[in-house]
Image (cartoon, rainbow over all chains, first blue to last red; front, top):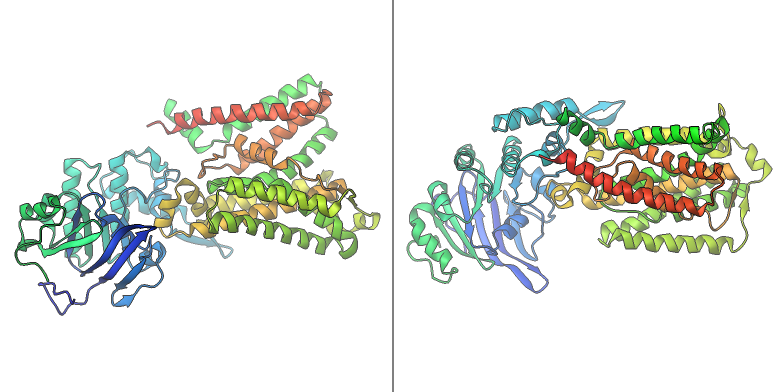
Length: 266
Length: 323
């Protein structure tokens, strides 16, 4: 079943998920999910709790390997699933519950896994000056309080500040894909608007942005395409303009059972 | 003022222990009318502190990743037995290598079960503690190893705890070397940053591309090596080892690390604090000996200190991290 993404059939998908399933013992978290994602698009991944959204992005970001099925990045099949591999490919994921270590400083969290080093007698030591200066510039550019000292433990930040930090970290490294899992949780109204603007900007810069949310109305305003999941299956994959937010909400409310009416993508 | 005190406590958790050590030392010196502070006593305390601290440093690294290594007492015993058992035949250098190799192997065994198979470290290392204590008793089966006179003349034997440098046992030099090296690795290098990160939040560390398995495996190897090395240093100093060598050392090592400001939940450790923690425990032990108090009271005192330390630690952490 070749996907035809109305926008441009000739384009090669940046990420291709083909017949992917994931089971934890007897529990099937994902069942036969196939979906393509293209560079330069903002995709809203929507569904109720337990729909399998987070599971799908855990596979894409290398945290869990699929039980069966294939994942392609830029045409190449992924055989080794590890977050390091995903990061090396230029994929950054803003996870909902994980991603920062409370015991480390803001700066050390910023560079965790790709720490800058300076060589002393050939040995790799942390470049603390660079850690401090770069991370301070980034977090303050993203609107963190001036009183936030990047040498302080990140545990001292509020929930919203931590979320802002994660977003700042994800978008300032050179990436090709940004995945945001419920990025506006814990955020104020103004911060939400900022995150949504940012998602659009990143897309305009040519990145693939996958935006996971419960809020169909919020994502319908900014996404190019909406993918709805339910019970571990992909139930709807439509261009934004093809359906109203209300109609999409109906699909989610009915648990994906109602066949998607109208010009579905297939 | 309040804020800066909080910052100080947060950034230097070992400060409390160091202050306590100074106070206790003064008190001991006064009570024993200088006996505790005599050169001879301090030499003896520094040697036993060095042995304990080297083991406790390895323990601190494991604690940094949020795990625990209870087997270190037996590992130091195996290190001591291997060294003194082989040295008369193959010489100190080869015996040292063999002892370190034992440390690596036991560390790898612990790492295999904890890091690769994901079993609880408390159980795994409790098992290896008994296992290698048993092997130690079996190998010696009632007899013991002692250093021969020719062995005592060997240069390497003297370097690894058998001799003195400027009046102090060479193990004191070793503890300082190990401290400096580990301090740099843990707090100044990427690998150290990752060790602390894994202890702080393993799932988050993994999501940032870290290999949690390799890091945990690695700290168990280091812990095994340091414990075996400490066993060698102590065996060379005493010149004698039997199956009971290193027994209960694991408890003192964990106590020293906790006293020194290492959090058993992982992610926060202090190596300098651990050194002072070891010194405090050994200082108290020496004090009790000078007062001719029965040795079992030492265990009671250590237990009391550890309980109080964990209480104080939690209170201080809450204070320091209060928003």
